[in-house]
Length: 320
Ligand code: AMP
Ligand code: MG
Image 1 (cartoon, rainbow, N blue to C red):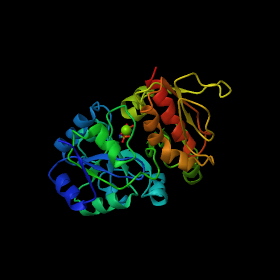
Image 2: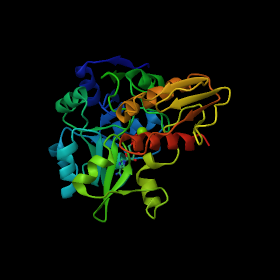
Image 3: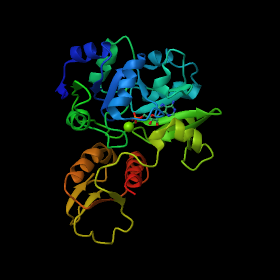
Image 4: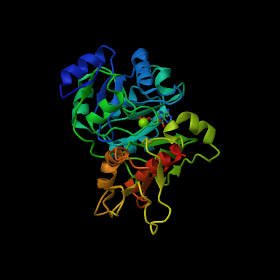
């Protein structure tokens, strides 16, 4: 089986209704989708990705109204955020209703919901009678796909159809927020910057792997596992930009190219949105360059730079 890439909604609808997997474009990264209310279909997602059962899936819905069918409680802040940022790269973790299968939430009593902004996937959701469970369409722990071809490269033998919506505009995964004891917590920095969220709902606590919540968070949000998003070539964060690169080392530069075995610049103008949209494709090209290792410069720690740096740090942690 080698997945076919196409743009036919009819085919995607037919396969999803039959309980099959279909890769779908979103504005963040490509997702590996199945009927979120069909336990067996969702099980296939875990098998295809070799994803451990303790890593819950995000449920993609059409709208805030649609989300209400699957969540029991909606804090006022959550409603406000949905109104402001949906459809868009923001995932909310909320108490789940019974009809959401345990496999989707890894047995947690919360479910992660998001309304994606990609027009093709919005049309797909409008035609389906069910929401779509869809984690990123990559093998567990590897880099997320931002083009249809990236999905085929990693998962081509695991599914039949990739719905092609072109390259992903945002390029990093969604921001994930939840509520603990009534307070908003950031589980994963992503496509919706913290700077846009806080004016609406006040200060957001950033969950850290070393916080008192660590055991619960580690079980609930393995997107938070230290090692993730990894290329095959070892990756290190550049500690000292004044040092020249060693022979064979590739450079992931933020703004300025330098002599290296291979070099990718994320944004020559320092535009964080451009940098985020190019991140995974640039890492893929460097991964193919036959370098001894990839040295990565961090982006400024603001806006989408937080999401970029989060992915780079996890990729580096996976290399050690
Ligand atoms: P992916 O779509 O591959 O980026 O993975 C989805 C991520 O969403 C998981 O790795 C978790 O970090 C997060 N997630 C999904 N459901 C929950 C939940 N109920 N509680 C906390 N985090 C969740
Ligand atoms: Mg993922």
